[in-house]
Length: 214
Image (tube, rainbow, N blue to C red; front, side, top):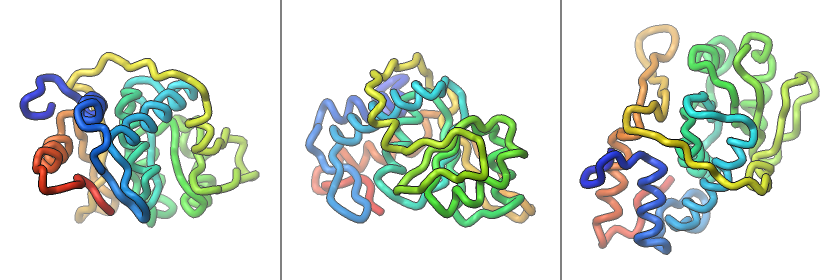
């Protein structure tokens, strides 16, 4: 929940901030700035595409990508669909990659070429995984029968987002953090996590023209 706005979850936060200041630069990664309105619109479209794949409230969606605008779009799209994002370190291999994908119960994984090559051999051990979404021109891997589709196809689905009814108690993200154990440990994050509050403070600080940059 964002301070001063009861029950405002992550997708609502972006939607309302975009309505209030649509042209405000919000995020930059390797190129020009993306405004609040642009991010809100793109994440709506991608969220609708995720719903078209059958992603429902509470489903786990793994993101195995380097920093990019597509990554930020996915964070908000997954939240708007009511699903749970599971960010996964792109350097994980073998059993260390299997651990978060299996334990979280990810039904969909979004990855580019290198992570794809690491995920495919693990597919037989991931019974919950039903789809792979490929980013940055990655081609489908012929060694698996698991459905593989381009990230762009989510934006080309032509569907309209059906916003689910969410509350601050709904799970928003599962984070795996480094520790002294052999595998990363799990942290659960709700839509009322500190991240929206930090972003809101940045947005309210008028001398600061952007909230997020990579």
